[in-house]
Each structure stands twice: as structure tokens, then as C-alpha cells.
Length: 64
Image (cartoon, rainbow, N blue to C red):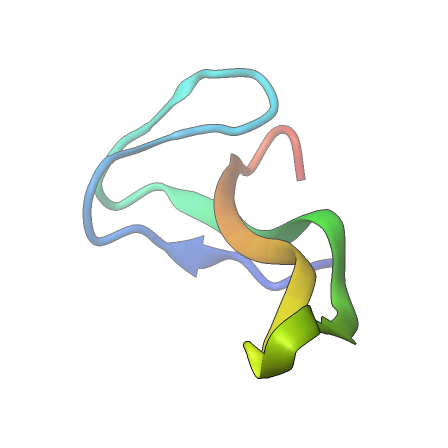
């Protein structure tokens, strides 16, 4: 069983695109695009480049 959170505002479910109303239970899930833990050095001393990023989405109680 995953821990569900009571919503403080309305959201849209990431999976089924249904509405999550204020006061409903939902789950926060982290999604990633690419490889956010992978870094490489950029040429000419410009710094480092990250090869992806993470973001959080809301998933309704039925989809979780």
C-alpha cells in the first residue's frame, strides 16, 4: 500500500487524465526524462551538462 496525500488544491491525474478535487486522496510520483544522474564536462571550461531531469506528477487514488 502506498501512502496517499490529501490534496490542498485540484490536480489532473497524470495516468487517466481524470480530475483530482480538493480534499481527495492522491499520490505524488517522480518521473524522469533522460538520465538525470548522468553528468559530463562541457568543452572549453564551460562547466557540466546534465543529461536529463526529474519532475513530480499527481496520480489519483484509482490509478495508484
